[in-house]
Length: 306
Image (cartoon, rainbow, N blue to C red):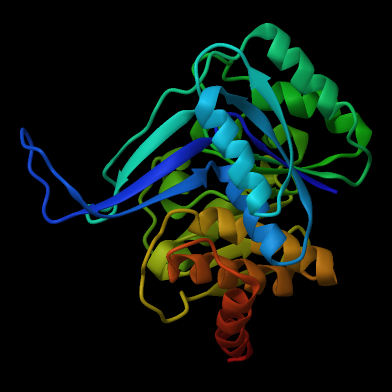
């Protein structure tokens, strides 16, 4: 069973405007309200690919209730912990200004809620996969990823980590099955600038030396690289297509990789599935469907044979 964790899920309010000006009233020309959060995104794409998971996390207030409702509508299995104080965050994203957004804070998660969360994790069994993705709310300690992995490492649980800098480096000693930095995040860890897939490879291997079993590096328009635990290095250019929405592409890559791995237990195939799923989401208004992933996978598999 795959479990995903989103400590601070959101409602993402994605808007377009006919120009945007400060100090003026700006009116939307198009808008969407979607469930957000890296772990939830992974669960959505896994579900679309026919792989069930359990989405864990914390919700609060009327926005939390909407997150839970929308997650059920998407077909997800969830086991969120309800928090009494505050409300789940709303993130406002300006679609026409890539990277321009205002993200909310989220609710106050107390010690009792964390205890309930750990009790849920104690139900995981050997061979289960736990996906820890995204930043940690200010109300929780930065060490919580490490604490979770220390608690579960002797149970035989496999870990998938999508996080940045110290949050990622500090958990490598627990031998995560998969980590997925992008090339900018990988460069920040080693204080270098990485522009090409060839430049990424030695630094991905350095993270393996520090404990990661498999290192999947996303590079947006440059494609992706996988250093697998068997010593293999896989490299693919980005499939051709029109970028529509980059939000969730990295999460989709994680989901595609896991779906591919569970289907064939072959790292080359899992890598191709990851690239296909990440690209399919980038080419779509929403997170990729199974049909969209399969269409891009045909292109990816041709590239892999060249």
